[in-house]
Length: 347
Image (cartoon, rainbow, N blue to C red; front, side, top):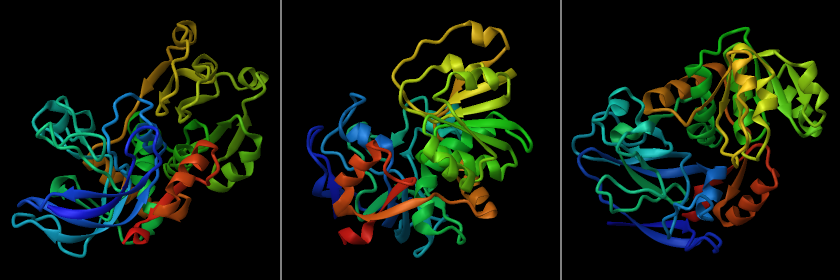
């Protein structure tokens, strides 16, 4: 086993603190990655504080990982020492079910092995994430980071990027489509950039008027403050697609009425339950759907798309010693728009 420095939560009430984990020695198909950067996702906070009730402690969060290949197993043929690579939200899956065969490993019918707070395929060994100096991953679950992407700004693409890219692609957003993005945080700012890269006409819907200038700088064509109920009347039927990134409870019905006939509202945030009425759906043959992340194939497609269009996350880079402060600031939306840990601070 390889002793590896990390930061971990001992339990739901404890701040993250220095911790040592055992990484497995690489098998024939494994890649050892020296971690350079790891993004801080809001879900890291939810899980470190056991807010979803599924936490495994001690927990090393982090699933937006950028690093360099340090070592490869004897049968690895995809990667070489020195390659710049990424690891996203999962590190293995059953490889046999219909979802895995379709390249949708995130929906593995036997349960994907997520990068942290999960179990390896043996169902026993806990997974530890990217708030650490290295990670060992099967070669098939590693991603190539294009040379043109700045590494610190590429890290959030492994979760925030694919979480917003996948529904834009899966639900067929095309050039010229009038679409809206609800919320302008870590997910929302990536949604704006990616939708603009696809040529859509993008409007940001936000409760916070002070975010207008940022939205326009990110590429949005319009900005609507949703505090005034009248804007939902004035903009009824305006959009063909709405990507809802908000994790706070809000009224889906109001946003559904902003859709055109046959329009789709896709949820990627995880708010508390909110009432859903039938009439906004049936009156316009509208749809409400959900989306998770993407599989390995689609995530690589997203990374290549970002490289082609010059898209990366807006980040604030921090040392690992400031991670608890970063958690608190994330909860206050006091970051533009994603924290990224420079893991050199742990080495």
